[in-house]
Length: 123
Image: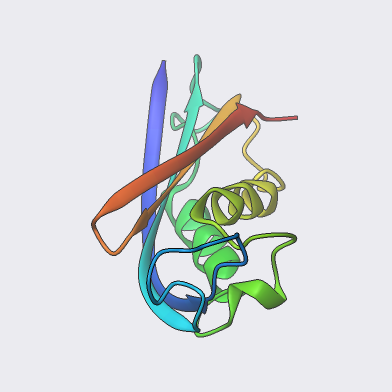
């Protein structure tokens, strides 16, 4: 299986909307997020690569720009968790023209303290 991974770092804000959130988490605060997108596929495309790296980098940067310096609560349904952010980025990246890629995993790291992932089939 071939894999291509690209990453993008951005800052976004949120406040948690769960009962009894940890101290300070119910207030608007910022995190530095690093999103990684890993495209996978069993075969290489016509030009000998899984996906053009620049295309993958641009697609992830564009997806991250929707949230960069924004409040996640205004863009994500429900509690604005890193898990929901990973899914939203996955949904944006699933539209990339990558015919040789069959699977995508998006991992979101929050302040280098924790990471979450969302993965699924493409097409």
